Image (cartoon, rainbow over all chains, first blue to last red; front, side):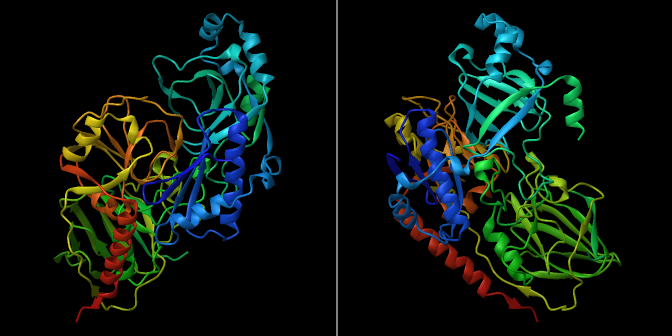
Length: 228
Length: 319
């Protein structure tokens, strides 16, 4: 259940679930996100344009021409959280990753005092939860990593990171959908496309609330999957 | 697909297809995009008799030079734009904005520049023959989403037209030019992160628009906003017009192609009523901010929409 509802600008509402960042809080955010999304797609809240979950907030953007903020706030206040379900809307994914494409394992191993294979094992054995997707299309923020692997961002971000690169920072793991600059510690690369503009019905692989597990593949398997 | 088309002889600086935007996808990292100036977009479509969300060409600063290779079409250009129509027989017509022109086969339209403004629009009777992606033809070039493979218009591109013009009647309307430099805002989610003095400065001092300004954001130079709480926040969803302040204290206004989530504190949000006014400001210009209340912002926006409807109602045939 959210703790506060506030307007942002004249065409946004923020549902604030409190300051903590954990899966329990985020699960509440995602339940509300699924509910709002379903109501909008059913045509019940015409004028709502977007609903963006993050760790502890759901931001709703609306068209001031079509709906008022008070109508949305009334709707949000009437939501019965006990009736919302998370699991039925969450998908489970296994994402192949080739750790031969790592860029930072050597340094991570030194900083963390854990050998490379152990870092990979911890990563492979983590059941990831997609907290949010964003910044650029298809870009997931997943958690939680074992605290043994907690690291900061690189001091100097890289100018170019290849698409599919899998990175970690603190308790989070991400995947870069496009070639982009970035400061995460890169431990491998996936041939799986996270965002495919050719696939109009479902362009984005992961959605907030989904569950992800990684599977280790060889360079050869990577090339094969990448060319499919 | 029809056989009528333009060829691009010069693409312009940042020429893209845009409409109202692509919605219900921000949770997947897809920003809505759409026309920077939605007022000029609606008026351009209305002039050529299109439905209100037909895709148009948006250009910034220097626009494109297009040659109509096959077909006849009616166009309207909105904004404060310097342009010419070069007829097949080399006759040059100096173009006027906010009215329509019929282009015959072989004619060229040369969109030279936006005057004291950033964005202009070209709508086409019946629309461009382009493929939408997720119900929108807006190009998001950063992520290569939308028609034209999600890329800006380039030289030698072929721009397809849906219909051949038959009705040669032309139309015009009048838009009053808004030259104000005060942008009305509401307080942002982290307004209280900034010192009392900075809050006062924000609403009393001028900011200069920097060269680092594009469809995604507008960077400002001026009084440094002193953050007294934390220069980072947990990343959260963004709305158009959010004014964020990174650690260097210089505000950045997030515009139509905004990143879907962001982790900087937000001092204010631009009101919907002044958004089009803001995005037409060019680098080097100075703006200032005025704080208003939510109910005023809502009321002002409704009045603004009425004034745009009036412009559309006042479209008249040219005799």
